[in-house]
Amino acid sequence: MTRKDADTDLVLQGIAASPGICIGKAYLVDREGVEVIPKYCLLEKHVKGEVKRFKTAVQAARAHLLAVIENSPEPLQKARILDTHVHLLQDKMLYGRTIETIERERVNAEWALKTVVNGLKGAFEEMPDSYLRERVSDIVHVSELILQRLTGNEAHDIAAIDRRVILVARDLSPAETSQINLERIQGIVTDLGGKTSHTGIVARTLEIPAVVGLEQASRRIRTDDLIIVDGTRGMVIVNPTEETLAAYEEQKSLYERRRAGIAREAGREAVTRDGRRYRVLGNIELPEEVVAVINYGGDGIGLYRTEFQYMNREGFPSERELLESYRDVIEVMAPRPVIIRTLDINGDKALRPGGGDEEPNPALGLRAIRYCLKRPEVFRIQLRAILRAAVHGEVRLLFPMVSTYFEIREAKRLLQEAARSLARERIPHRGDIPVGAMIEVPSAVIIADHLAEEVDFFSIGTNDLIQYALAIDRGNRHVAHLYQPLDPAVLRLIHRTAEAARKRGIPVHMCGEMARTPLYTPLLLGMGIDDLSMNPQAIPEVKRMIRSIRLDEARALVPQVLACRTAREAFERLRQAYGGLVENGLEED
Ligand code: PEP
Ligand code: MG
Image (cartoon, rainbow, N blue to C red; front, top):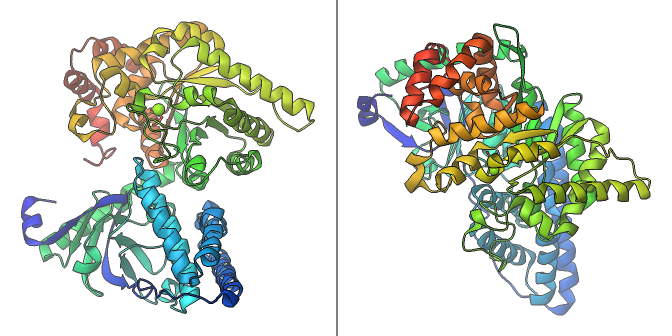
């Protein structure tokens, strides 16, 4: 939008959670009613009854969730978004502690639950990782479901909305968003939430535009206001001028035509004009994102980040629990490959913030494979779960943040040990799955020839490789301008890795964010990257770029780009060669 529009319309800026544009009447979802919680003390003889009342409310909340699941749109059922909530309802952390509080403090169930939730909120909100901070909302939503049953204050019935609207709310719970009827709800706008909040996941799964984290939207928008939701740019325009409205109507139809074109092509193979076929895969963090990978035409999962299952809880997940979630993903994807990355915690995803084991410099600390080698009893459970899950499809294993030769040897030794223990116990498993190393630390690039002798493939993690090569904290906005994928140092590291892989005859993948930018695709393929993996929404455009280029031409461009002295120069060189393809509707900006 132009400056002029921003001056004359009321424009709210938030976080782009699900792309697309919708224009329509706002519908405010009011969630007052559960905020004021009374406290009263109980006589000893009433404690048992209160615990029972709490348990009944939990059962009723569970029945409600199961009914919502059964009636929700099919993509959401497949995505199993509400399953976490069903589990959370009876999680020790929430359920067990509330009962303990009722018994210990002899207080009413509502108050006990609220106290427990506040304690958990405090602990989660301290977490440095935004994904985890947002998981606090799961706890809040689940507790609200129980509270509504305890207090008799029923939640808003989104399923009952009978006209086409855009939902505006302070926050929406997954139980609420799962009731969305796609014929009525055009988009979602919320005050709270971030990119990885459930509202965003649901909206992306349903492919409706969403802007979250707007802070004031539910105060500044009223029911029946005309609003424009630009989920690509993270903007909401309230009661727009005629001019803005016309401009957005046009953008909306352009966007929809483009999406329809991409959707028609999503299933097409990514073959270059000179005949080389590439696999374009998806990165996932939650099992439910598998659906998006399939919908966007992904050829498999190139990076399954497994740490999230370890973080929203006390203690570690059991082998069975891990096995079940890996199996879900593998079975849905089969026969397409699934690359499961072993635990990459600490660094920017602390395992137990506030647990007393914080490090002064976590990015350089006991992170990822280092942590796992130090805690073999934790690692072993995950390795066994992966080997067991592998019988259900095409599984590969990936070790993160390898920085020395010893680490890869040691990780493989533990893997073999896990396979032997399963064989001894006669538990079905596959002991021969391909094993890869993530190349995301400069030392790994330097010894890539040695590492290549030990693994079946490499996967370059540019998010970390850039951070460690250029000494730029990937989460620090003050140095974000220096975080350049096309920096000559980064390009040389990628090139060197690809060369080491080629010499040894093993494939090299890329699963960092760099892989998702169509303008970089020719350079990466030219340097010898075999598979690209990215967030699912980016897959169709990268596939389309691959179909538009010739590999021999891309290869010829590599020495010219590698000779550039700055990231800007490299960018200009790529833009000269391939900008036409990108600007022809391949990229938004
Ligand atoms: C990377 O570092 O590029 C990567 C893919 O892993 P993560 O972003 O999970 O660290
Ligand atoms: Mg990484």
